[in-house]
Length: 153
Image (cartoon, rainbow, N blue to C red; front, side, top):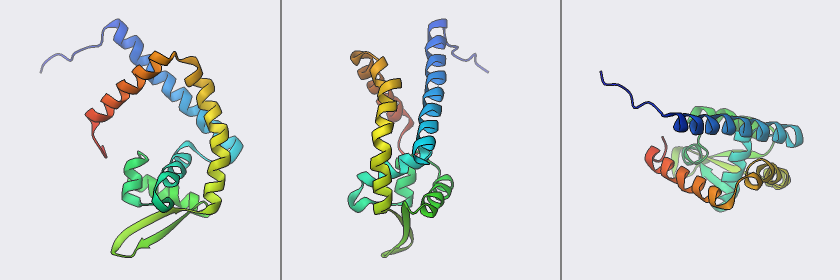
């Protein structure tokens, strides 16, 4: 068995900063969305993805891939959103096994309200504390990470 390629001290510091910072940032975003709008980060992400889709609807399989959730987890999350009247699920007319998730008008209105507060949280704890060139580097870095991971992983 070969020896792992251990991280050096600088790599370890940067990796830990990423892990700790991303976890804490997600916790802050989740707390703020729940307190102000009754939405979790994963629910908010689903509403965003649906709002950006043609006719505000996506097949559940595509939504799971875009929202970075397993199909099982997405199904539970969509059930919660349906019970709140924010999402509606419909059968796919040309594929009996397919199911569409559709953002309702109430869901879109909820998203519009939540987005105003959410963007301020993102700005306060992420955008405004990072130098523009560092923000570009983060974008390039995570584009490379996503390319390595590949779609639907």
